[in-house]
Each structure stands twice: as C-alpha cells, then as structure tokens.
Length: 484
Picture 1 (cartoon, rainbow, N blue to C red):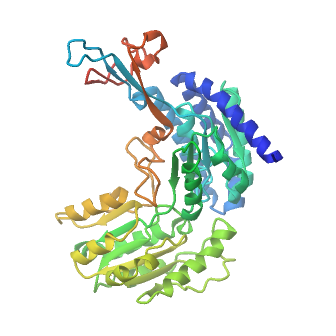
Picture 2 (picture 1 turned 60 degrees about the vertical axis):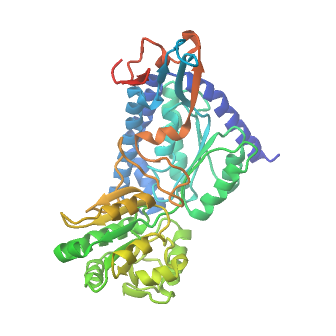
Picture 3 (picture 1 turned 90 degrees about the vertical axis):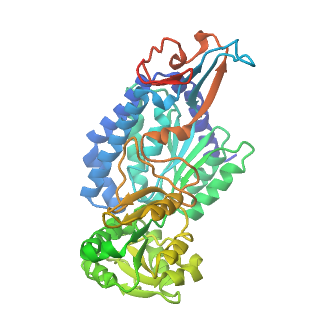
C-alpha cells in the first residue's frame, strides 16, 4: 500500500469517526459551523481573490462576487437546516382499528455519511472547496473530503486551511473536512468504502469515468455529477421582429461571459430562417474582447472544438475566426450558423459542447422542424424562450421542460440564483441525477430516509417527538403542520 493510500485511509477513517458526531449534532450547531466558515471566507476575501486571480485570470470583480455567493450559500444552508422542513419529518400514529391494523410509523431523512466533492475549474469558489456541494453536505451532517482542482491548487489549499480553522474554532469535530489533490487520490477517493456519495462538476469524459467507478463498487454509491450542457435558446419570429438588436446584444453578452466557460452558456440558439439576426449578432459580438481561459488544457481544447464545428458540412462562420491556435492573448468569440435540417442529419457532430466563447445559430423553417431538432438536443441545465406576449408557446415550453431542469423566459441562462426554488440540474448528460446542486434542496442528495416503527420516543430524533420540540414543519397523520 502506497504512502498516498495510507494517508487517504487515515483521512477517510477520520471522516467516518466524525460522521457519528455530525449526525448527532443539532441543526443549530451545524448552522453555527456553516456560519463560521462563511464569516472566515468574507474576512479573508482580499487574500483569496488575489490567489484566485493569479491562477484563473477571472478578474477581481468576478471573483469578489463569487466569494460573496459562496459565503451567502453557506448562510442559506444554515437557514435551511434550522427551518427544519429539509428533514421531511412524517408521523403516522398507530391505528389498531384499521384493516389491517396500522403500527406507529415515523419517517425522517438522515445523513448518508462521508461525502467526496470534486472541485470545478470554472468556479474556484462557488463550486470548489467551500462551494455548494461542501456546504449542503456539511449542513445535513456529512463530513466532506474535497478533491482539489489542479487549475487552482494554491487557492484550494489556502481555502481549505481557512475552512478547517473556522470549523475547529466553531467546535466541529476533527475529521469533518479534508482536502486531497491529484488524479490518483481522486480515483481512490471514489472507491474508498468510507465514502457514501460523490459530488462532481466537470467534463463528460471525466465525470462518466468516475460515475462508472462509483456505481461498479462492491457497494455502489450515488454519484451526483454535473457534466455538460448545451442550454438551448429558442427565439420566435415575433420576438426577433420586435427586438432583434436587443436580443443580439443580450446573447453576445451571455455566450462570451467568463470566456464562455459557464456551465449555463447558451450554446445553441434556434432562430426562424430568413432573418438578419446572424448579422445583428455578428455586430454585437465583434467588439467583445478576448479572454484568458481557465487552464492550459482548456485553452488547447478550444481551437480543436471550433475546428470540429467549422469542418461540418452546412456550417458557416458568422463572426470571428476559427484559427486560434495561439491563445496567448486569450480566446476570441466565434459565432457559427447552420440549419435545423442539417442538425437532424448529423446531430452527434453538431450537438457537442464546445467550452469557450462560441455559440451555434440554428435556423428552423417551421415549428415541426424546430420540434424535431430540439428532440435531438441532449439533456441540459437550462432551456430559454424568447417570445412576445400573447404568443402560444405552451408546446415549446413543455418540450423544453423535458430536456432541461430550468426553463427561462425573456432572459439569459448565465446566472444562477441561490435560493429555495432553484433547480440546477437536468437530464443526462447535464447531470447524473434528478437533484439540484444549487439551492436549498441540494441537501437532499446527501440524506436517506429512515422509518421507525413503534419506537420509544427516547430513541427518536427530536423532529419525531409528538410535542415537536424543534417547532418545524411536519406531516402528522396526513396533515401538513407548518407551525410546531
């Protein structure tokens, strides 16, 4: 057994020991741990942003805002667990007169155990060491072991130091949080018997490889992966006629935001055939600056992705240049166009994500052709509709709802609110599960239901006591009770 394996075993063993303590901790205690981490991140924002900018070139404004989002979601989860409905507490009292007689049953969600979290490249704070996966797992009492992303390793290490210190000062148990790095460590982490679930944000090939490992273990575990998304946008003829230039400006800002490296970038835009929207978008995109890519590997892949699209029959370059072999000055925006008929002929070649500031306009001749082309689009995080008031888009919305987890109207998908209603997930390959990785219900990924039959109250979680000492929402004998 290698030294690295021995170190990982020590980390996962400590997490297993900590899990007993975190599961028994009160919601108020765990909320205090999360708040302490949020406060520590905010207190060290200047240092963290400087390190992050040196490794990612995302800029101080974007990164400062991302730290605020990260600390904000930690505080949101503190609110979620103290509100109490996340436990889904249900009580059905015994009914001996029923046929057959019914026992006393009380059901609640419990923490699943130690969780592995894989950091993302494109959000070095919000989807990284102290990001949403970590926050939602810690919130429900699951220790977390984070696999650092190689694209911002120094930041990961410094963030982990801050998180570890904050948790310790707040009274959290040893072993509740750790950081590992390197591909070998990540692979071993997924296979470690102590790990009970995995959160992942990254590429389809990398995510699928880890997903297969997680599900082929002697004890398969849930793998909550966010892998890839094309995020189709549909614009109607009436919308283009009324506000074409406005839509072009909005799209240009959206697909180039963050050098096109957002998971919610609008990668496909369906427009009616025979309009001048392509030229309007070209005009709106021409002055968008080049931007540095997150890592050398991503920068090397961008030109290859552009050429792959440009080489397809029936594809035209609307603006920008495909020849971007040297990205020393950053990646430049490129807009392509093709027809829905062409997409129907070669969906595998045209409906593939290209990570970077590029988008593909797809002209549709009629509603039937639009529907047929959308049916070929893989599962996505978002689907967007731009239409005019009064237009009947019900069937379009229904179709987008089947392929995306969030359907937007008259907006752009590159913005994900962190709140109770958010759904950041979609059919495969957008995600590998039915759950969200952003928002209050992200905690559900790291819990499992347990029912207790005819149990003495002394062994039950306080949420299942008749008196409801926590004062949380519950369903009792079929009736939802919102106040204790």
